[in-house]
Image: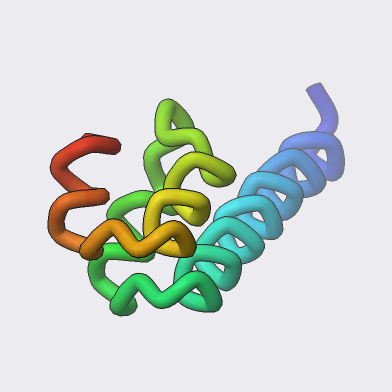
Length: 66
């Protein structure tokens, strides 16, 4: 595989991580919790955001999601 293809894939993964992090922080998660959730690809972003937007406390949401 060409080095450019590997770099592009890593760049795309970094963009996705950054986007997930921004969305979680925008929903109200603190930076540490948002990072923990953003890097876990098994955590559904829409579910994570939806929980806090519906009034679930952040710590409870983390226990549910993780």
